[in-house]
Length: 81
Image (cartoon, rainbow, N blue to C red):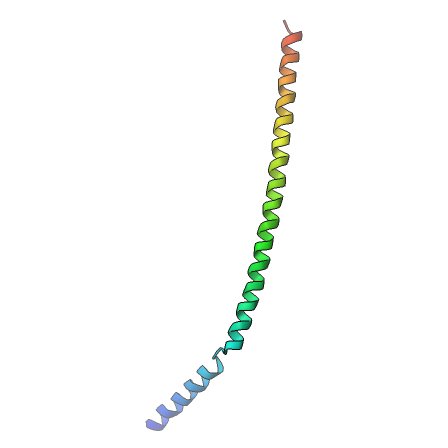
């Protein structure tokens, strides 16, 4: 029984040792995560720029359409009895 427990303990110890993360592994993981977060932040900045461009385009269309409708309304009011 003790030999079996000792063997299981050795297997467990070996399994845990295989999955240890060294400081170098953790530093590499942090570096990879920092790069990925930087890429995500860049994509958000690009999306924000596109949204701003779209917003200004929508405002321009709204103003132009409003002027056209006002002009059409005044033209109809002038020529219709």
